[in-house]
Length: 302
Image (cartoon, rainbow, N blue to C red):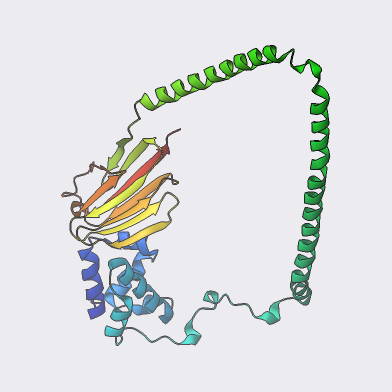
């Protein structure tokens, strides 16, 4: 039976201060729960290697808000030393140049020359197209002027009054649609803007799900009233923020181009969530359930 080491006690106290269970920590760090237990108990013999011991401790520290370098230095007597030969082969992704086939090497050497030839040919084609287009414009202009000159005759003065009336009529017809379009624009401006709808869909245990619609923007702000730990991901599981937010500070992220936001909160009673400046009301009492997982599904307005 193993007992908590000094390092393990320090890490466990930091985890419990964040109101994180071992399951929560496993989800944040992607380290198996049995290894997390081994770190807290100082049972490093169960680890796959000494390299993993230090790596797992660093990830544990970062998840609970501790300085990993400081912790490893302070408790270096408890942490196994790491030698270069113990680093697993799968971590090395460097490929020796000797393994590159000779044929591929020749292709790589020739690639800059091929690209240079392609660029020269492309530039020549572009210049030819531009010159041809420019040369054809004067002929078209001359033909247009010739036609206009031919249409001018002695009868122009006799038809002057008729042309003037036709022009006046045409101007009147063109003005009318413009006026109608202006009235339509004014009517659209007077239409009341739709207000966003933010409503809870489901809530169970520590999990709650909300729906945001009738808006084309989704700006999330998480504000601290104490020192809560917060993790924020998008719908694809990408971590966008993780850490402790100081009192009266906030973290803002624009989710307008996302379909979902997932907020993992360590102390819900010290945390306020705003969606486009509208305060989200917890469906689960934050004083009763401290650790909460809030999901907001976003449907952009058409």
